[in-house]
Structures are given as structure tokens and as C-alpha cells.
Image 1 (spheres, rainbow, N blue to C red):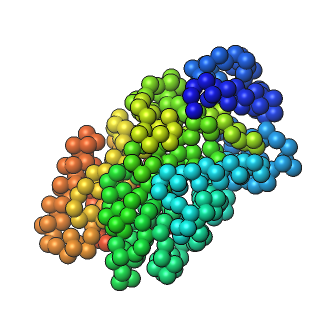
Image 2: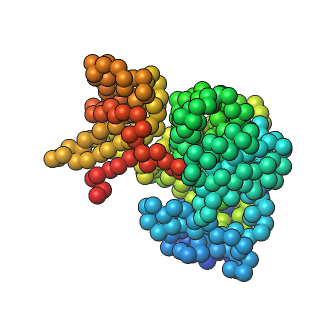
Length: 419
């Protein structure tokens, strides 16, 4: 889709929102702008941002641009940082969402006839039903395992001869451990592809999962406020996440100033939907940190393409003036032999200084080594952390299966400064 076509869709969507959603009419008027003022895509920067606190203020229906009787489904975020944000769907929204997810699966090499084990949670969370409808639209067979009951999940993978696994990357890593503990080599499963999302994960973690199962692991992007999974997807080249040109306009901004950044510059992702009837979002600040590619992918799936998530503005830790993302720590750990891939970060204030401690779980082989070897490993991790983060981090090595496992998003950070 070219810029002229995308701008036409944008103007149509802005006019729709201004006419049918009171929130947007009010915010546009307060900013002194109306849809007719926009003459090009660049003028989108004149439109005010939509924040999570705005969405939360409309609980329990969310921002609505349709009559409640037209709503066929509600989803909501987890609400872990406050009141949940609610997203509404019309029948047309559900159909388009399914098409988007089907297209995501397609560019990752999933096809009709595949057996997909969907281990994303079903319910208010958008992941389970979002992947389910998209997989069925593609023509695949879905095994709706949802989250939990990991031993049974492993048995289903074996018995159903699953081709594609959909879940969070941290749960995929956990599943590989449970498969191995059951006496099966994960590589012997017929599993071919993994569709993993809902949390940031590094290329190093991708390699761990791919090596464990002998599969190709692809990143899928989305969030409740954007309509769920399907906003972005890696193609088989694994070179950035494609954002559908006819469904969203994506910007990258400086999270402090709100200034729009050029391709290649890291900042906060801002999304404007072009397809949603019930709960449209205009310049929604996602809190996710990434960047835009300047060149087009050779697969030609879309013009817009973003880098894989580097973290979030709200889980970025500031330790003694240094910005630290969990993804940086994960990258360090994933490249050290003997580390299992499971870790937790503890932050607390001692006196006037912030201190960070990383609990790192090691493999059985390393744990059975001498105490001297374990101490040497700990020092090596601390040195590599300092080289990447430029601050000293205390590392505590713990035995296998010590770090709590997650069947959804992994809880990586425990910030005692907030307790």
C-alpha cells in the first residue's frame, strides 16, 4: 500500500472517530485540530496522543465509537498496573482480526492442515481467542490447551503430533524442560514452528528455544489495546516485524519529548488503527520500545516494519542513573554456557543507593561442578553484565528449578523500591 492510499484510510478513520467517539471529538477540540486539518501523513503528529490512563478512565466499556448493542465481545488487559483497559469488538472487528492473525501465521510458514497447539490463555486476555480464530480462518486444526497443566500439554504435543506451538517464549522454554524430564528428547517431536509473543524476548532466547525443539521460532506482536495479537509478525526471514499497512500507522517517538523519530532511532511505538469499529485507537502510546526499518523486507509483506521489542518504558529500570532493560540482562545470560535461561531481577534501595541483584539459575551439569567453578561462573556473569550495562550487578547463582516458572508472562522483575 502506498502513502496516498494509507492517508486516505487515515482521514476516513479520523473522521469516523471524531464523529462517533466523544473522547476523540473532545481531545481533538482541546488540541485545536480536526480531521480536515491533516493534509498528509506527516500531519498526524498534530493529533494528540491516546494514553493508557485515558482508556482506563472509560472502564468498563472502553472507548466506544458504536452503540453498545453492536458490541459482540469485550476483552481486557490484565490490569496489573491499575484498572484494566477494556477493548470492544463488533462482528466486523472480529472477522478482520481473524484475517490479520491468519495472515500473520501465513507469512511465518504456517498453512492449512497444520495442527496448532494454542497455549495462550483463553478468556479476557486476547492471546488465546485471537490466535484461535486466526488459525481456524487459515484452515489449521486448533488444540485449545490454553495455559496451565504443563504435563498434560506435553502429552498433547506428543499424542496429537503438533506442528505449531503458540505461547509466550518463557513458557516455551519451560515446556522444553518438562518434555526432557518426561524422558523425550524435544528434538524428536514433530513440532516445526513456534509463534511466540506477549513479552519481549531476545535473539539469544530465540536460539535457545530453536535449539531445544529443533524448530523455527517467530515473534508475533500485539496488545489488547490494538485489538490483540496480529498487529505485527515476523516472516520466515526473521528480519523484523511486519506491520500491516492497511490496518495501522505506526510511529516511533521520543518517550520524553513526544517528538517523532526517524527510521533506525529507538523510541516508543505509537499506533493508529485504520480498521476498528468499536474501539479505535488514535496515536496510542504503547510503552513498547523499538525502531522502524527504513528499507522494505524482500518478502514484500508490508512496507512498515519494526525491530523486535527491546523492552518497555514502564519496565525500564533506572539504576544509579543508568537505564537497564531486562532484555539486556537476558541477552547476557543467554550467551553464557551453563545458564538455564531462567532468572529474576531484584532491585532495592540501600541507604541512598539503588542495588540490583540478579538470581541466575544454572543447569544440572554446572550445579554439580565444584564450588570453585560456580564462583568462577558467577564472576564471569558479573563481568559481562558490567561490560553491557556499565554498572556493577550482584549475581547469585541458584540451583536448577529454583526460579518460579510461568505459564504466561514471566515475572522477571521484583522492584522492592515500589513495595
